[in-house]
Amino acid sequence: MESATITKVTLRKEKLRSGKLSLYLDYYPPIWNPHIKKMSRREFLGLYLIGNPKDRFELDYNEEIMLKARGIRATRELAIINEEFGFLDRTKKQADFLEYFEGKTKEKYQKWEIVYKHFKDFCNGRCLMKDVTIGLCNDFRTYILKIRVKQSGNIISRNSAAGYWSTFRALLKLAYKEGWLRENVNDYLDRIDWEEPKINYLEIEEVKRLAATPCKVDVLKRASLFACMTGLRISDILQLRWENIELSPDGGYCMRIRTQKTKTQATLPLNDEALSYCGEQGRGMVFKGLSRAHTREPFKKWLKDAGIKKKITFHGLRHTYATLLITNGTDIYTVSKMLTHKNVATTQIYAEVVNQKKRDAANSISLK
Image (tube, rainbow, N blue to C red; front, side):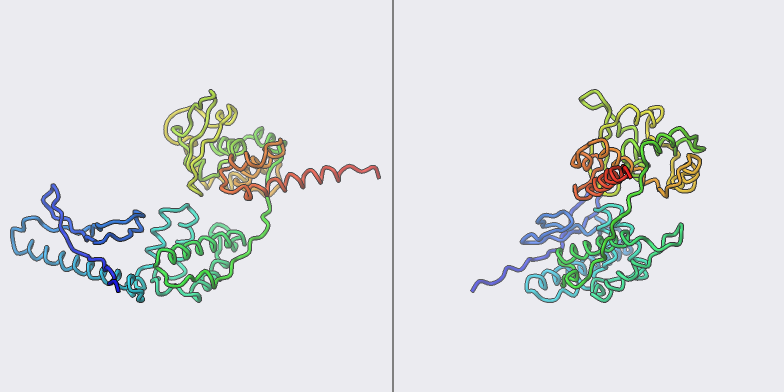
């Protein structure tokens, strides 16, 4: 019977140009490193020794650093032994779930960061891997459904709650897949059902009326009309730089962006009228001085001045763009690409809105 090969963990030193000694762990055979997503032999600890200690103070300092490094080596070795022999890895149970969550937000998009902040508030800033139980997760589900919007004090929409819960469950799935959670908690959790979203948008006549109405905040007016012409989210408009706008091979202009929400790389065409709303070409931010605060009360005031009574937010201008494209005969696949949707199914709702408009138009004709 073959004996199992146990990974050996050795504490080693590497001399740096500065004369300091960098401490690292040497694994043999190599182990899987989830951070770099490949097999690796080295794990640098971020601990350093003084190369040539000159007095008792520096000797004591080196000894204290070595004690910490030996402690880390022992912890890693125990974790590996537990993994290889299928024992319950108690070091992972004591790992910080919040720290793990925060690390994942840096790899994902904005919604992950929002959910992380809500979970941190929910658990009062402390949660270990061993604390992640079905009961805790269900309590967080209840908590999500009661979150209130700071500006209005109203409870968040059902779809926002469903989106947050879906993100949290995706995190649990990752933690289980990577071996941090011993149980796939997702198997025991109910989803939050989505409601059919109501799409608020402007008709082309309303957009023209808005364009003809003066706005006290010029940059808000230009950014809003730009959103109607491009479908960009406010997060992407706020981050848009002149360096993102360039001439394309066909002689027109295009935008090369990485969306803030989904981190999707996209190259989007930009017609001359949309470009004119950007103002005088320069460097840095395109819509300088624009803030999210402008998209609230100043935006509502401008709509009111234009005689538009619809309840519509700045994001509704993105809906307007999509609806206008489909109304003008653009195919759903192209619209999906223009909106940087990852799934055409997400775009399908605009087609349904346009179909309803057609049915309403047909029903408006009567000889009675």
